[in-house]
Image (tube, rainbow, N blue to C red):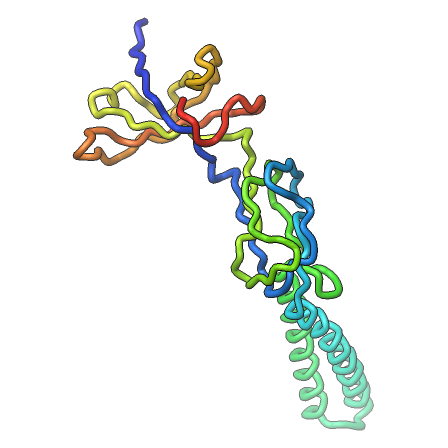
Length: 230
């Protein structure tokens, strides 16, 4: 059977599902940077270290909360034993139990606070990438003071890319989700990379009479770069 063929020029872009923006998460001073633009990294690999008084205080609060919890646990156990022997009142045992619950909640909150900061030891927060790929942006350097909302690194897995197209309204009838697509870089037209249609736009631009079509491609041999036309 005959199948219509549509030729369109598109632009290679990142697949957001394979891009990670790694934030500093704590206020402090950049101590060391391990990775730089273009470096290939593995998941959870260290990118940089930040010295943070804020994190150090949060870690110290765990030790204080653990000591308070231990004391409350001993007191509650003692009051329970005394109550069983008739040497104290139920009210005293209830107060001791309530103090233990409060200490337990305080300890849990202190641990969750440190966990939210990413853990670490001795006030050192380590930036780690949740995905493997290449470092495409770096915004921190040793000695730099940073806030908790700074994007320190941007990492992308370039084995998975998008291609953004603008397809004219008259051709949309021939474009469907999961249609096979052959992609060739303009600089190397002999290359044929197979992709598929992942999204067809729902809105027609009234000025160009076209809509956006998104192609997903696997790029394990790194034949495509982000930005060029294909």
